[in-house]
Image (cartoon, rainbow, N blue to C red; front, side):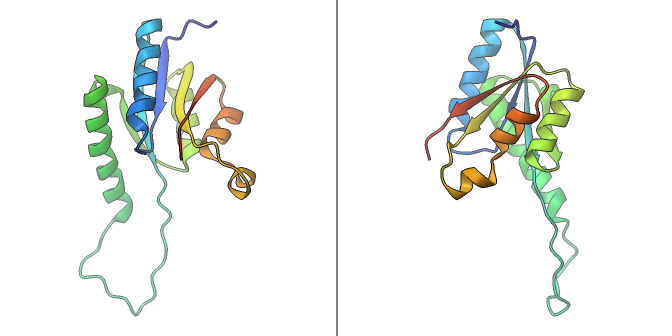
Length: 145
């Protein structure tokens, strides 16, 4: 078994996030590893028709990033993760997680897996894409739903 030094918890703020976070904290304590957190904002801009006039220019992507930072900060506080080990990225979920893991020298990625079936399974999931694209170990924590 590997001696993990840097564990990355990827969160989407699902209802099971604290359970998945507790698993990551447990592993970090066991291996005396650093624990970092990432949330990836998947914002796809949509062009609005000229009929719709917004009262002011709104940067939706930046708003989602700021909201992600607030929610990630709250999770980090519950898990005891310092601000310097928290990242909010704007990308596709799996690309953002994989890129950050590689840039930061992560040797274990922890994330939730919903165990999709049928069409959702054929279309893939973030956990599956991370599992097949990662250069390091990946722990997909099974969540109900």
